[in-house]
Structures are given as structure tokens and as C-alpha cells.
Image 1: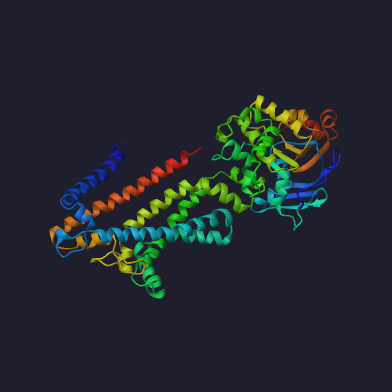
Image 2: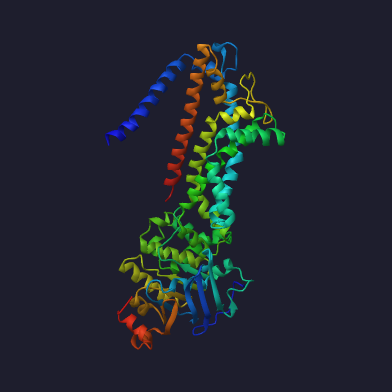
Length: 270
Length: 262
């Protein structure tokens, strides 16, 4: 038992140490000017506004693309195709896709969205790539949530003369929603931190403007951080530290939101 | 299938089941059942666990086919119309042939009132007005109105188990069926809740045709007019309840009702 405790405490301690160091570096730069500033050659004037806006835009569009597709796929697999040959074939592929490294998704996005579909190095191409990346997670967690709805309630619906779709829409989905929401938010918070696919798809690293719509060039928080970290000047490394704090804070915020939502929705009348 | 029908009165067959066999995959669970179910009577189905009694009533409202790999052979007629005819929509059939399950299963996110109206809401057939009357009438018929009239907006799952089961009966009655199938409706209830449901069965059979699966022979004797005894997927004996329990014709029926097995 002592060993297990050590196994928990050691990584936690190291993580805290690391976070402490980052926070110390970040302290000098974490202010409003940094949050609202644009890229600059001078580390002290550089800010992360384009990166924050870019990330927000990316996440929003990833959600818009991935959630309906993911939830729809989960409903098909769980409620309609169950046990069928097509469904089990899709299932195996989804499980495999969840394990594919994100760089590969980046290459896929570059080939399909940026080049073949001609979206260019745009927000939309990157969001579509991230949507593909999180789709397996959204599908898996949505299926899990659907599976939690007891069979007896579906039977109650059918016995009342409801069609399969009426049962899904009015009874099953509302009950599965909290679980689906939690899974989806966690998937999106993963997308928020992804760097590799964005690099491949072609996010910019030096941006002095806000993204102009969906078809324009953009940058994102992890990209900006990556860029600053790789600079030799120590001041830029401090910028990176401040960026990391902002990124971590927004991810924690998303995860907390997932927990709160799940708690709220589950406590409802039941 | 027309929603309205001519009430044919007592003694007339509601369901005519002919050579009904049912399978789950390769496993045969019913063997060529022939049985007539009379209108406005309570017909009890008894037999040891796994004898196919639940499968039998699930064939009557086509719930059996919802299980993948399940299939049937034979004919079931409801008022002369073949229930398994390709032109009959199982969804519409189930609005005429309601069902109550073993474990009370009110919808957890809905209030008492919403539960009663759930069937009509689900199928988008709730009228613009008059839902209060529907709720009162359905709960009244399920002998629950007096107990819950002051907490219609409380969650349905907040009621006691016996009240939940009567709520499920009210929910089934609200869609206006003329047959009510009950799959061991009291097996999850205590004796006093069971007694209430049994009283209710006596009242309900005046307006509905009831088919009740039960594992309790005493219950079958108390509530039913006719009783069918199933064993290993076959119908062994079917007759008036008093006759089946006082002078069974088949030795297997006698062994079962005298407690030699089961």
C-alpha cells in the first residue's frame, strides 16, 4: 500500500513542482496587456489575443462539427445497428481510430481538408481536423451514456405505442444528455490542447491580427506557446509560461464545467 | 387498424391464438400454443419460471420481436384481424394492447402527471386541452387518484412501489387500450400493495380484457376467470379458474398446483 501511495504522490509532487516553476515564470507577464496584446518581436510587448480568439473559434467549430456527428453515430450504433455486421465493423474502426496519434490526423486534415477540399490553411480546415480527432471520443462516451438508460424505460415507451425514434427522442436522449455532455466537453478540452495536427494543417505562429472569419489564417494557444518556447531569449520563455497558465486555466475551467453540468442535470427531478 | 371498435361483450374471444411458436435465435421457447382469450375477463397465465409465459404475452402486443433474433410462427387474431399481418403497424397495435411490467418503471425525469400523459406525448396524440381530465380519469381508473391528487407535480419515482405500479397502469390506460397485459405485476410489491392491485384487476376487467402472467397460483385463483398452465413452452391445460384449481385434468397441472414442483 505504501508503494501505491508513493506512486500517486510522486507524480503529483513533480507536477506541482513543475506548475510552481511555470507559475513563477509566468507571474511577470500575466496581466491584461498580455491577454489583449498581439504578436510582437519584442517579448515584453507580445500578447496572446489572436491565439485565444483562434482557439475559441477552433473549439466552437470543432464542437459544431463533431458533436452532432458523434451523437448521431452513437445513436445509430447503440439503438439501431446493434449486433449488425455493419455496426460491429464500424465499432472496431472507431476503437482503433481513438488510438491513432494526432499527427496522423493532422496529415489527414492536410491531405483532405486543406488540399483536396481546397479549404486552405484556414480555421475551418483545422476545426474539421480536430473534429475528426475527437469524434471517436465523443462517440464512445455518448454510447456509454446511452447504454446507462435502463432497458425497462425503452420497453415502457414501446408498450405505450411509441416508435423507436419517439422513444429515443423523448425518453432516452434526455436521460443520456448529462453523460453525453460530460464526455463531449472532455473531448473538446483535449482538442483545445492539441498542437501537432494544427502545426501540420498550417497554423501560423506570428499573427498580428484576429482571425477573419472561417476561411482565413489563424493561430491557436498551443501553437503560440510552442513558438515562444522554441525561442532562445529567456523573455519569450516567460511569455510561454504565461501562455501555459492561460491554457491550463481554460482547460481546468472546461473540465469543471463538465463536472458541474453533470451534477446539475443528474440531480434534476429524479 | 381502426382505433374504435364495436364492444363485443363478455364471452366473446378477444384474442384467438393458433399454433403459436416462438424462438430466440435457435432456442424455441413456445410450442404450438392454441388459446382463446375472452373479452372482459381476466385470463391468468401460470407456470414455473422459464416456461414461456412472459414470451407468450409479449407475442400478443408484438413486443417479442423487439429482441434481435426473436421470431414467431403461427397466428394471433385480435377481433379477427391478424396481428402479424404485414399491413398492421406494431406501434398502433401496442396502443390498443397496453402492457404493465414486472418492475414498476415510471419515467424518472417526469412528474406523476407527466407520467400519465407520457404515452400521449410520446406519440404526439395529446389533445390541446382536456389533459387534466385525462390525468384524473386514468389515475381514477388505476385507483390512485385519491392518493396522489395533491402531488401531481411531484416526481413519479417518489411514490411507493405499489403506487408506482398503479401509476404505470394509469399510464397504460391513458392511451385508451382495450386489452391490458400484465407481466407479473405484483412480483416486486409487498402484500398490501399486491392486494390493492388485485382489487383493481377486479374493477378493470369490467372495461378491459386482462391477461395476467403470475408466478403465484393464489393470485391466479383470486383474480382470474380462466387460467392457462404453461410448462416448458407448451400449454398443458386451459380452463375456468375454479375448475383448473379444483379438478385439473392433466396430471402435470395437478403436480404443479399441489406444489410437487415449480
